[in-house]
Length: 200
Image (cartoon, rainbow, N blue to C red; front, side, top):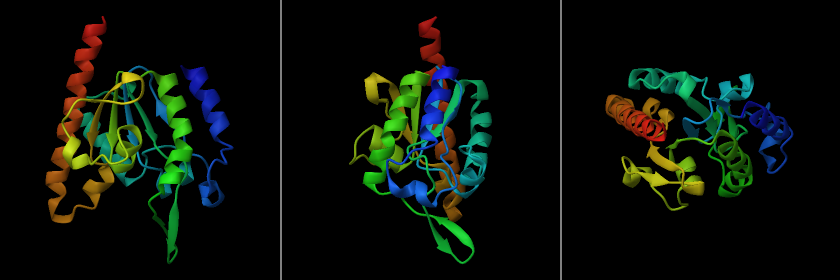
């Protein structure tokens, strides 16, 4: 797996499939283990764009905290995004997240398809609307699919949840949104454990 993902990562580093590369620092490719749980978010944020690693900003720190609470070890997860370049707009001296268009999402789906084929996950967890619409259905809604066993490409089992950034933006509802995401991670843990046992 490592050599295959490393090769895809090198190819993606020079991606020009959509215009997002022009204003991004670098391609932010996925990383982690093969054969376990793949978590797919929307796109890298400001911190990820600077470091070149997925889920290392505030939302990523929350996600890793919740993964630990759910009892999902790092060696069982692969973290990536549907879009590999940071799309942003200026606000003063800050770079603010800007939602990628469907054409940009579709252009980048090439890399996600290659990642899933290389990693061969037991389960995919779509975090947020962009990943869900790309991998499940363009009209899919997270609120209606949470907690349901689904399938994505090549029949890979999948679940849908909110993105950790939605928890951070939830204001007074933050505790409730955090509990929802933790609940979905615990379901993913249980599904993963069941599939791994069945495969032995």
